[in-house]
Image (tube, rainbow, N blue to C red; front, side, top):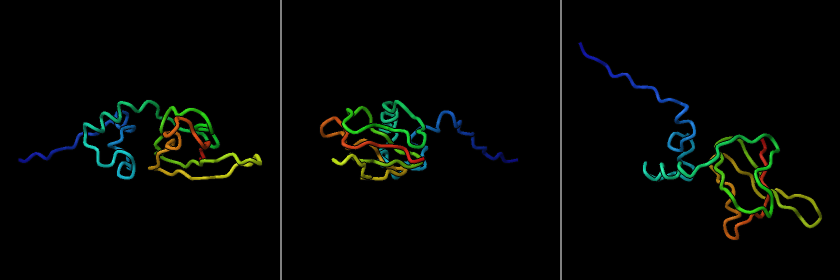
Amino acid sequence: MTETATPSPIPLTETRDKCQFCSLSGLCLPAGLDEGELSKLESVIKDKRTYKTSENVYKEYHPLVNLYAVRSGSFKSTLLLANGERQITEFHLPGDIIGIDGIADKRHHVSVDALE
């Protein structure tokens, strides 16, 4: 009688927020990182949250505090024009990193809001 190996289940509570199990990992920042490098990356990820429609992620001129990886949904970046209107400068989709605009001088140049 031969025994067949039964795969052990992966507990979703332990893996759902890990980059290595994300379906977008090939499109995102972790692409090409080995297991040790992924562990280091995951150790600095502080907040995994969901944004409501129209909720602001950060505002123009605010200091750079975090970078954000889009895992689902979409976001838009807007810039305040001299006449008071807002111009959409970019859409962010799953796999995108948000907040890079603030790296050079440690403050953001656009506002970012959730679309859904």
